[in-house]
Amino acid sequence: MLRSAALVGSGMALTAGGGAALAAAESEMARIRKAAESNRDADIKRIQDWIRLPSIAAENLNMAEGAAYMADLAKSAGFTGVTTVPSDGYPGVFGVMDNGAKRTLGIYFMYDVKQFDPAEWSSPPLEARIVDKPGWGKAIMGRGAVNQKGPEATLLATLHAMKKAGVKPPVNLVLLCEGEEEIGSPHFKQIATRPDVLAALKKCEGIFIPASWQGANGEVQVNLGSKGVIELELVASGEKWGRGPKGDIHSSYKAMVDSPAWRLVQALQTLVTPDGNNVAIGGWSDNVRPLTDREKALIAEAAKGMNEAQMKQSFGLTHWIDDLPFEQALIRLAQEPTANIEGLVAGYTGPGGKTVLPGRAVAKMDFRLVPNQTRAEAEQKLRAHLDKHGFTDIEANVSGGYDPTEVAEDSRLIKAELAAYAKLGVKANLNPRLAGSWPGAVFTAPPVSIPAGHFGIGHGSGAHAPDEYYVVESTNPKVAGITEATLGYAEIMYQLASVR
Figure 1: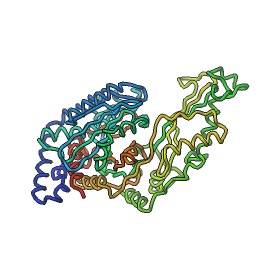
Figure 2: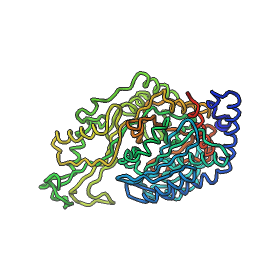
Figure 3: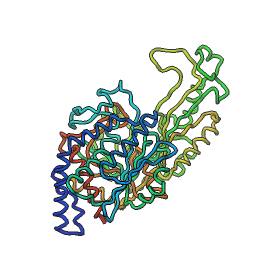
Figure 4: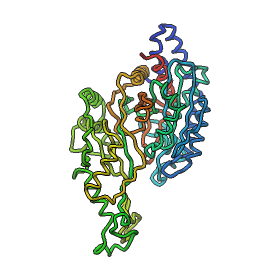
């Protein structure tokens, strides 16, 4: 279905031009496909080579090299005026492509990836080997394969195919990249609001991050927003508390010495209800906007086509929170803010025991935010809550985060996405809110104020986890491989150029 649909793509481009426009669009898509097929090996190698240079913001690993590599990729794909944009953190990369078109499309990239432990992987995470994924096909396995280098490099492959085919993209393009997404984009707004970057973004009809989230039935979600996030560490220490040791001491002294680790546990317990499933911070949900009837209806419709058993199996689950029915669990997923412990670190965590009383304990946490919460409000309420409960000594060290994102269903970007998926023969479900987060609020909020979302076909999985992969040769006829995914990005350009 995907192959034949792609050949007749760009149907919306004919709305103003009739039969001649249809013939031209079909001819261009056929030429792009031929070029993409001949570029296939180079396109796969581009992803593999990029994976082999990991930029990890949390570890300050290869950040300057990653920005330079990203700039070279942009230049090679045809972007002009490509510059490295400095910030108070790691740099961004900015470029434009003026194709003389009436409309402009923004594209958001990240060049950083999450940390990894090679011992947890079945294939070395920086070798980017081609592996077999039963039920999916051949895939590149490596850190960043699906989050986000595979989808991003596939979009670049679209531009290489267009160039080879002698086809000018039907929209102008603005590319903006950052290297701090995986630490909460703490300086991205600085990059996006630099005067030249801001001026280019404000010309865009919308901006999207490439995605490859097709399920086994080929379906995708069109997200009308995403949750916001705050990422932080809560730290209890004998030094700040004024009680307990400043460093680790022998555990036998617990009979007469206070424990910073237990201090942290007590503080954590106040943040949530006893089951851990609802945030109990004072005033946390005062401004939360409940889902509308329309949003709940969209979730109910999407639930009909989802495989609950398969979803549970993929997560290793047998129950949802409170044993909720699937539809209600999905509503909760979209509607509720969360407090999550990512990791707990104190004292000795190696093999066997080591009888120490730690002088410091850390909880790595993330809080997901929904409309109409803001990052600033949430940070203030967290601090006020800890102080009110007597934990003035507990440090809350915020490393990054941003507000929730909302996009109008009738925006030109969303209309173009839906039209593109329709032409590609892909079932698309409108989703009120992605439970995950990305810095789309930098675009949707002033001063940029443009729609922002996700688009793409293809499949990958394992983001932030071992054995991350991106399918390049699909054995599932309903799921795109790299060539079909390449054509998908061409399709969204044609759709945005013409959709009313």
